[in-house]
Length: 505
Image 1 (cartoon, rainbow, N blue to C red):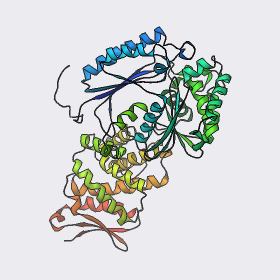
Image 2: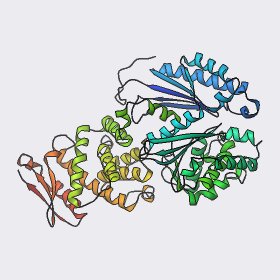
Image 3: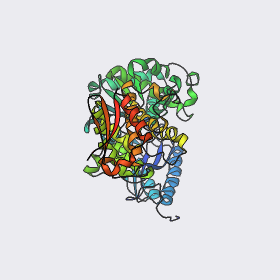
Image 4: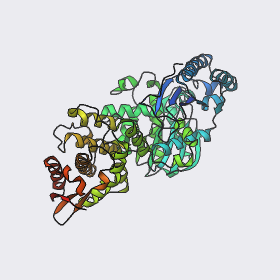
């Protein structure tokens, strides 16, 4: 392995950690930069080995699927050595635990990877998948469902509280085997299994968090068919009332005839119908209000379980924004100062905020300067693209739009003239108004501070009956000038006030 000094684009820590997930359909390696509240993948690769194919009838892992999986694992082990992984965890799920030759396969995996292999029970799979939802969403409320090749795990989730999990033999490969490839029979099997679920009884009117590659493929197809503007899978939402016909279309016609089917990889297409009918039956039985896609699941839940309690309690969005701020901003300390200052400014403007809006504003403050190295004409656009498509969790798509627009407006001005229609389609009017107000506050703050710490806390925005005042101490009076007066005037105009710079203190 080539040793180099710490890369400036990396955050130092314990070192890279990796998880290999040996599922019934795919074998995947994910290497993360370090153990953290919001872990960043350094490397991610999967191989569709199909270990679970035929296990329901033969009770054995086929020689061909074992050979394919072991070949992938040899590559993964070599990659871990090359990357310098300091800790590797190997998890195996339904197909391995159910096959008669599973223990022999695990012994070979252990030799290749040089570490123990954890063969998860069904309840353990359900627990870690639900922890992935806890890790990836702000106060989740609903049922987490993880669909693999061999099984479906369902778990009730309320905030950080996780209920008892259930496991059903409804994974795509398993359902295909049990039904003999007959979709009508598969639907009956899925319906009977889900009607026996105790967890499903707690789903009505709540959110179903869908985990797994097949369901992500379904969501990707839905994005393509509807022309959805933000191509970020985590947090993508399907309203159940509007998605029933779409889900039925996945198993009521040949895969090749489905509109925009090229959005789904050819390797995933054969199981698409089975994933669609399971989700359709789940919606019928559970009556959730919406389906939300989770890009985090078993692997992330497993890592989350190993974090210290104080790290688990951190806010995932703020932690990720703080990391990006550290890596890209001129002064992370200045960005931190903006959180309290902009909060006081919002109060001075008379703009109320919910707790969620306060959280989004804090994240925006941390992200406000990440585009400073770009050409001035493109700072807004570049920042918007980085933020809208960042690997953030703990934020929904409207929240992403708020973050991106607040920084876009900061650099590009408060007008929408050059803003494309994409994000405007998913951001609520309330968020858009607050993003514009926050950007106007940024435009004042950055002219006062020049992005340096220790200045903004010594100033304040103060409101009188008809006037918004920027208060500067005497030793900063020379910062007053025409450009700052113009920015302050723009900010005051948003709430119908006059403006003035005041020297006080």
